[in-house]
Image (tube, rainbow, N blue to C red):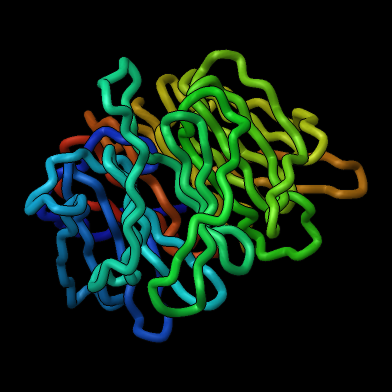
Length: 336
């Protein structure tokens, strides 16, 4: 179903972090942007669709009044809002927001660090654009920071802090189908496997809490009112967002899942784990019977590689890209 394409080389290898790959397709310019985190650097590659031109950029983690920051970056993700696109980077010190090509930093938010060192690490992790003008970022304390983003300029403001989780946020996801009918438009996951379902607005409302079972939910997606969650057990669970009904449970991988992605137009689901496997599934929702069917379509083995990032490169799932720990390349697969 998929075949391997020419890999894209990156300047540094990928760190072992959940969801360590972000992809943005720039259709008018026939370009795709990729970002991969290595220690305190974000590797950015802009690739032309014909595969002939690549340009590289590196973004350092930053903090005010320090020439070079050594704070580790936890995640870099593209956030696509109706009026603008931003690249958001989270680290141990704060949250940086850039224009999507990485050219200009438009906003910096420092994380609260205690004056006396504590046992708990401080970092940001979990990034998602939500609704018309919000970007949400998770924090190790369990808080979710909600930023109000204007259509242009750097007047980004922290509009709300959501304090429901008691454990570190691992991932955030917004409704990716583009459907306006879905009540829930944000889901948040934490280290205890708990999932919280939200409705965005001037004040975010919590709609549902799906209790975890003390196993990390490392990656989560929201599609057509359905939550798809990947866990450290290698399992994928599929819930109805608003009611929390468990539709399906798949023993998908032998080891820890690091990344999930959904192609919103086709219902294809991508899962990738430490067991070197990337699997492609197909989700079929049947509203009349309120059921979800899952079919396994394809898998690829990236030999001897602990996969840490996997993303579709388009909304139909025609192509996907994969990163692995200590690998200095982005591996690409395209449908045959």
